[in-house]
Image (cartoon, rainbow, N blue to C red; front, side, top):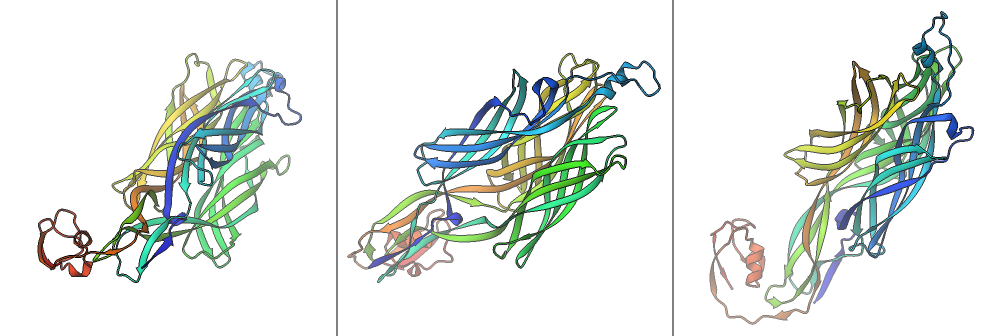
Length: 512
């Protein structure tokens, strides 16, 4: 007799070895662009996001490397008093007219190690990284102090043999079906996007940042059509001072595929570069030029039958098993949620006149599926800047918790790999009340973890001597025909019953 085996290692039977989380403090000097001196600017607010992060598993630890992209909005530290148009003595109008500023993007790299007893060299490690706080200070240099949340998963990708039969013998095997949804990269590309937008009267664009939202993906042949929206937050300058302005542009992208999509497809579009400039001096129209990065994934639902128990009828054979925690991923769900909340003002802010700008940094804390509802909880960190009667702006940070729910078709799941991005954030100061309205896009892949015992090897089989007898057997709760057949070392077909799963107390009569 010779046992046959299948290797079930791979993406369709993910074996989770460990999950670890940590917070990494990132501090250091931010490089300033050419032509900008720290003494000439007053930083108003900053937004940071993790532009790239990679994790590597080693014995007993996970090493993470990443890069922060930091956008800084500032106004000029020195402002001239400009007389009003009618020559009246109006200090408020003079101050507003003199307010100038701008924005720039800088970056900071970071490295971090997380202790993980289960991690081993060669295992696959994944990390989700996000920024929970970001502050700036001036001490001879522009100093960044940020905290990045790191959620890591380590998977055992080593070969895992599973019994698939025995040549020369009738082998009875018990299987449990594992269903999972995989996302396989089938295309990556970059494309240019150009458009124009009308600006509010009397304003000039200084800076733009934003996010992309995908509405639909239609694969066909060697290409896929992606429709979505480019959401931009603009920093504008006028006689009234600096102000924020949100705009959205629909886009349609035809992206090439490396291989044909056999089923459904999922895509991400990210904003790599963005430029905005006046089309001409007097038209009130701005030209927008963006560079978009596109990634397309094929989504496939698959089933794998796992051999969890086995025996050879009429023989004594020791089966060896391995325990594994198998991750079953479900289909991705992406949806939008609009959050409008009042923000408590810090003490001593009675002189606040209007909002200048804000930077939103959302992140997810928990996600689950219960009773057909996908729930995602998280926090939005807001860096706010308000205009006051004093020369200096009022800047402060606030945190808004959120709970977003949507219908989900699928089984319950105790957790989900979820992410969130802010498509737009508007700050309004009315009657001494500060209100933030944020449009969030959330994406989640719910999953369950199933602890399984997998038959990975078979010992020598020895015939069992027995005396023939008629057995009258009463089934226990949750017992199956396989369980009874294994108890008496008989073929499963010899156990006559109404179904594979037996009722408690069900009477069976068979020849042993």
